[in-house]
Length: 400
Ligand code: GLU
Image (cartoon, rainbow, N blue to C red; front, side, top):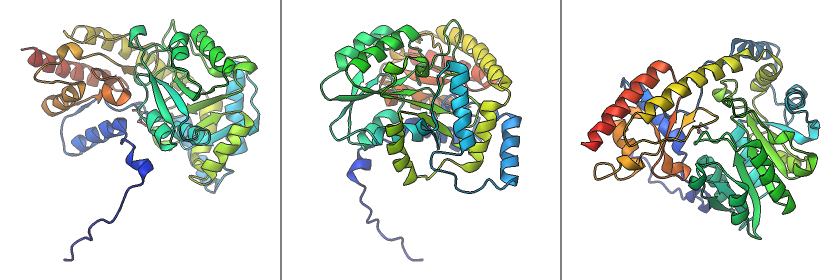
């Protein structure tokens, strides 16, 4: 048999600077282990363990049968744009125009479109640590410079003072993410507003990633930047997703709400990359927003119970300490006190946990928080119990 040709491929400078997604890598590691028949506990996946609600699946089926299988306008169908607009009007009292909305292939594409249509080489983009792994990579791809804001002193809750200290004359944009992936922390609405006031005074653009918008645990409250006064929203892009709220990760559908000119630029990017979000997924998204919302409440109730159980259980493991996440479905404990000669970093910890206890967690380093681990509780109670037993056993071995 002929040998394969030696690779002549030379990666572009832009992509050479990119790190592969560590969240996707953790999910794929778990998947490979499951396929090999390993009894794996998967705390890696940032994805609901629930199935997409039936009414949404039915809407997709109907759309497919009705021949909604063609290109749609780049921004999305009128129905999906109107459903998004109606949702924001209903929930937050904000009236968006169709020219300010677009459906995207997942929330990730909304953020990608927004960043690459705004950032010039050398522009600074503020990111609070810990950040979702994809943010800095998109910024670097656009040849911007990520400027990281340390928030450990405030338990990973970003404050207006921290933002103010990081601003320079080159600051063009900040990406806010509350509830935060990976910490689960929520910026209190009053503080969020102070941050937005500060940014509006300095003409700095904002992307508010509201992917976990609906998964907030009382007394914290659901809050969208859409509810802020118009004068604070002139440079605001809201990026949203159907993936988490409606357990639709595989459907790849999200959206962006932006001032008209910014939307126009984003549509050019989308028009030359994916054209439009999947037509069938757009019909499903319409049903998700307009149909009954009881599945969201049921998922939230389940996450609430798991979160309470997990936080207590983690606190009983010597050496682990964990802030209380007010939203999303992640716990983000520090394992620094467990580190030593056996596991020097949180990456070593995660790797050994995988090898010795077949338990997948995501290392905090990829989120800019070395010494921490992200544990997703978007998994069954049974898996949570088993996984925590394994982590406990592993930590006990590290301590001996
Ligand atoms: N957003 C999820 C996570 O953080 C899914 C993977 C990804 O897109 O990063 O795990």
